[in-house]
Image 1 (spheres, rainbow, N blue to C red):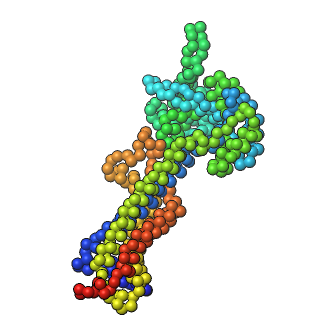
Image 2 (cartoon, rainbow, N blue to C red; image 1 turned 30 degrees about the horizontal axis):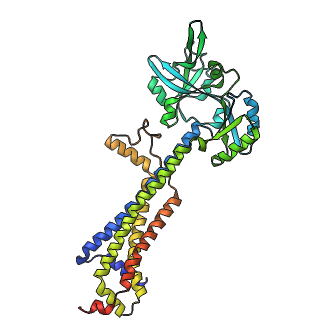
Image 3 (cartoon, rainbow, N blue to C red; image 1 turned 180 degrees about the horizontal axis):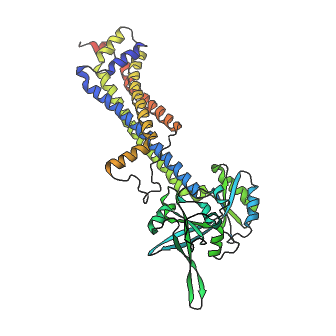
Length: 425
């Protein structure tokens, strides 16, 4: 072990008259510890939010939506074949998008009504975990053996979100009425179109906004109810690489030509993900200030140690120690503080980040409140995804800041004149 490192480690152990310096050293280590841990935890949660939000959005929604400028799409079977020939397109499915109202006894709610193909929808979208029932029950022929009332057996099926079912008081295999804004002309004027549907499934996407507003029915039932004939709203498309969706969307537009147009998921959710990235950068900058404050503590600690050790430095120089060796002693001392703080902060940050969901559940049970209320935030659970590249940057950056903070006090120590320091001793 170099004698410079040995002396620097001895200086970290306080003597009775140097307790104040030791306290400042401890505060410096704690400051770095908190800064590194906070950065790792917050960035892991931000990464988790972005990843979880993206997965949920791209579960309920497709990667690309293809529609016509002129309105509904008629020859969608042919369009699906043409789209499947485009490179990196995995699957496609027709869909119908409309708005309606659901009525169950005295409860009424506005919903987004989506018609989906029971044959191809599961290849493109994933509406989440089915709490009750299943998507296959949308087709009447798949309901054999279910405990249904005779008058309900032939009703068209519907799948609703768990929050929507809660608000309307709906349970599996109960009936609900859909009220369409597109009315029917009668001799007495335009009256709303009302039809009964059978709830054959309740899904949980983990996304409150979707769970409280989405209702799925089969494509055929949707066309009949909305009087759309053979028309659909458009195609939903799944691609191999979600980050190439913009390029693939342009390829589809070039292949299909006018009047088709395609929008990809990054374009449709641009503001949301841009806000998340901006928030992540801002949080990184704010929390980095904790490390900078700790670095200033290291500077003040080293300056106080240099003032305390004037006589020691003079003796070392008298015994042949060079200015470079004196500088190294105090640089090693500052680096040791930084490495201890960064290492312990990294370990603590990773432990918390990797177990954040369990910790949040324990805090919720202990204090009796919900950290992420589903009706306020997009997500109901606290997600976490540790990016080890971010962790490396945080630890290396912290140690570098600590190293830079040692340069001035160490340089001042190396410039000490032994004769001046020992004159009055």
